[in-house]
Amino acid sequence: MTSNRRGKSRKEINWPASVLVEGHLIECRISDVSESGAKIRIPGDKDLPSEFKIVFSLKGQIWRSCKIIWRDKNETGVQFVGPPHKDLFS
Image 1 (cartoon, rainbow, N blue to C red):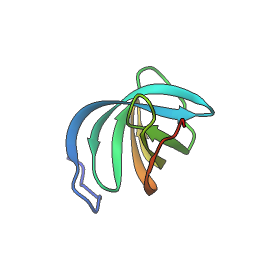
Image 2 (cartoon, rainbow, N blue to C red; image 1 turned 180 degrees about the vertical axis):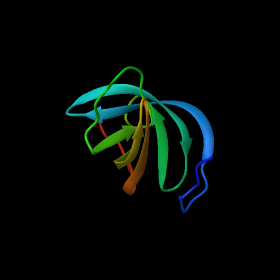
Image 3 (cartoon, rainbow, N blue to C red; image 1 turned 60 degrees about the vertical axis):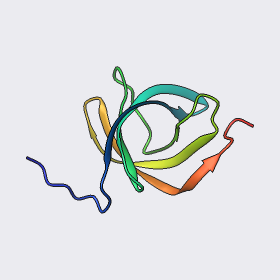
Image 4 (cartoon, rainbow, N blue to C red; image 1 turned 60 degrees about the horizontal axis):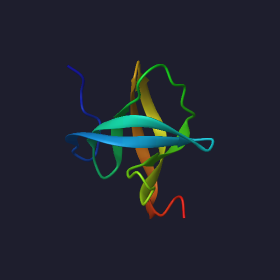
């Protein structure tokens, strides 16, 4: 069993989202989330940069900048950088 090194408790969810990388959206699923970060699952073998944006809504109304903390096959742990943002595509 792995230890939980997070400072904030996470809530398990199964929420569709997207990762914005170089102007392209890549579909993903958020499997858990907290105030400080999330665990995302990306289908296939996508190579993500160390920092990117997670878009939580279809129209980009809510998004967060994040950086990768760990990677394991198709799961990635990210830490949110800065506050939530709104209206990415407007």
